[in-house]
Image 1 (cartoon, one colour):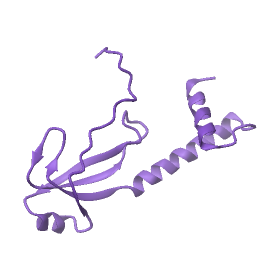
Image 2 (cartoon, helix red, strand yellow; image 1 turned 180 degrees about the vertical axis):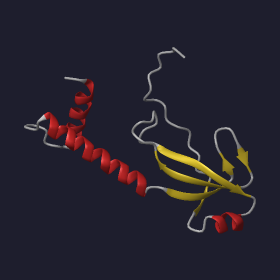
Image 3 (tube, rainbow, N blue to C red; image 1 turned 30 degrees about the horizontal axis):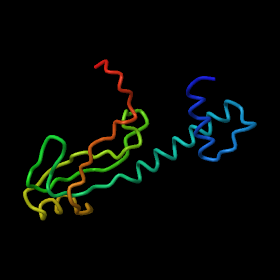
Length: 124
Protein backbone atom coordinates (compact mmCIF):
# COMPACT_ATOMS: atom_id res chain seq x y z
CA UNK A 1 0.00 0.00 0.00
CA UNK A 2 1.51 3.42 -0.98
CA UNK A 3 2.27 5.87 1.83
CA UNK A 4 -0.45 8.29 0.65
CA UNK A 5 -3.07 5.56 1.04
CA UNK A 6 -1.67 4.70 4.48
CA UNK A 7 -1.99 8.34 5.57
CA UNK A 8 -5.54 8.51 4.24
CA UNK A 9 -6.37 5.20 5.89
CA UNK A 10 -5.15 6.51 9.25
CA UNK A 11 -7.20 9.70 8.69
CA UNK A 12 -10.30 7.59 8.03
CA UNK A 13 -9.79 5.77 11.31
CA UNK A 14 -9.38 8.97 13.30
CA UNK A 15 -12.23 10.74 11.49
CA UNK A 16 -14.56 7.77 12.01
CA UNK A 17 -15.15 7.41 8.25
CA UNK A 18 -16.30 3.87 7.45
CA UNK A 19 -13.64 2.87 4.94
CA UNK A 20 -14.43 -0.84 4.61
CA UNK A 21 -15.91 -1.68 1.23
CA UNK A 22 -14.77 1.47 -0.57
CA UNK A 23 -12.89 1.09 -3.83
CA UNK A 24 -9.73 3.12 -4.52
CA UNK A 25 -11.76 5.47 -6.76
CA UNK A 26 -14.30 6.04 -4.00
CA UNK A 27 -11.50 6.77 -1.53
CA UNK A 28 -10.00 9.26 -3.98
CA UNK A 29 -13.37 11.02 -4.32
CA UNK A 30 -13.70 11.22 -0.52
CA UNK A 31 -10.18 12.62 -0.26
CA UNK A 32 -10.95 15.25 -2.92
CA UNK A 33 -14.15 16.26 -1.12
CA UNK A 34 -12.30 16.60 2.20
CA UNK A 35 -9.66 18.75 0.51
CA UNK A 36 -12.42 20.94 -0.95
CA UNK A 37 -13.91 21.44 2.53
CA UNK A 38 -10.50 22.48 3.88
CA UNK A 39 -10.11 24.98 1.01
CA UNK A 40 -13.56 26.48 1.65
CA UNK A 41 -12.82 26.86 5.37
CA UNK A 42 -9.53 28.56 4.46
CA UNK A 43 -11.35 31.02 2.19
CA UNK A 44 -13.90 31.79 4.88
CA UNK A 45 -11.16 32.39 7.43
CA UNK A 46 -9.58 35.21 5.40
CA UNK A 47 -9.70 38.02 7.92
CA UNK A 48 -8.12 41.47 7.88
CA UNK A 49 -6.77 42.68 11.23
CA UNK A 50 -5.13 45.90 12.39
CA UNK A 51 -2.39 45.22 14.92
CA UNK A 52 -0.37 47.45 17.21
CA UNK A 53 2.58 47.34 17.25
CA UNK A 54 3.42 46.27 13.72
CA UNK A 55 5.76 43.39 14.59
CA UNK A 56 7.09 40.14 13.23
CA UNK A 57 10.11 37.87 13.55
CA UNK A 58 12.54 40.45 12.16
CA UNK A 59 10.82 43.80 12.68
CA UNK A 60 8.99 45.88 15.29
CA UNK A 61 7.54 49.28 14.36
CA UNK A 62 5.52 51.58 16.66
CA UNK A 63 2.82 51.84 13.97
CA UNK A 64 -0.45 50.13 13.09
CA UNK A 65 0.12 47.13 10.85
CA UNK A 66 -2.59 45.58 8.70
CA UNK A 67 -2.48 41.82 8.13
CA UNK A 68 -4.57 39.23 6.34
CA UNK A 69 -5.04 35.96 8.21
CA UNK A 70 -5.75 32.63 6.53
CA UNK A 71 -4.56 29.03 6.59
CA UNK A 72 -1.46 27.75 4.77
CA UNK A 73 -2.49 25.48 1.88
CA UNK A 74 -1.85 21.76 1.74
CA UNK A 75 1.11 22.28 -0.60
CA UNK A 76 3.02 24.26 2.06
CA UNK A 77 5.48 22.97 4.65
CA UNK A 78 3.34 24.90 7.13
CA UNK A 79 0.07 23.32 5.89
CA UNK A 80 -2.84 23.83 8.26
CA UNK A 81 -1.14 26.53 10.32
CA UNK A 82 -2.29 30.14 10.49
CA UNK A 83 -0.83 32.33 7.75
CA UNK A 84 -0.35 36.05 8.45
CA UNK A 85 0.32 38.25 5.42
CA UNK A 86 1.49 41.86 5.84
CA UNK A 87 -0.64 44.30 3.82
CA UNK A 88 0.35 47.80 4.96
CA UNK A 89 1.26 49.95 7.96
CA UNK A 90 0.05 53.37 9.11
CA UNK A 91 1.22 55.93 11.68
CA UNK A 92 -2.28 56.36 13.14
CA UNK A 93 -5.24 54.11 13.84
CA UNK A 94 -7.58 56.48 11.97
CA UNK A 95 -5.57 56.10 8.75
CA UNK A 96 -5.52 52.31 9.07
CA UNK A 97 -9.27 52.17 9.69
CA UNK A 98 -9.95 54.52 6.77
CA UNK A 99 -7.96 52.26 4.43
CA UNK A 100 -9.42 49.01 5.86
CA UNK A 101 -12.84 49.87 7.37
CA UNK A 102 -13.87 46.22 7.97
CA UNK A 103 -10.65 45.30 9.79
CA UNK A 104 -10.69 44.29 13.43
CA UNK A 105 -8.31 46.05 15.86
CA UNK A 106 -6.23 43.58 17.91
CA UNK A 107 -2.90 43.48 19.70
CA UNK A 108 0.19 42.07 18.03
CA UNK A 109 -0.72 38.65 16.63
CA UNK A 110 2.70 37.40 15.58
CA UNK A 111 3.29 33.73 16.41
CA UNK A 112 6.46 31.96 15.27
CA UNK A 113 5.71 29.04 12.94
CA UNK A 114 5.65 25.54 14.41
CA UNK A 115 8.29 23.41 12.69
CA UNK A 116 8.35 20.41 15.03
CA UNK A 117 6.73 18.20 12.40
CA UNK A 118 9.75 18.49 10.07
CA UNK A 119 12.59 15.96 10.22
CA UNK A 120 15.82 17.15 11.79
CA UNK A 121 18.24 15.22 9.60
CA UNK A 122 20.92 17.90 9.71
CA UNK A 123 21.55 18.01 5.96
CA UNK A 124 21.14 21.75 5.59
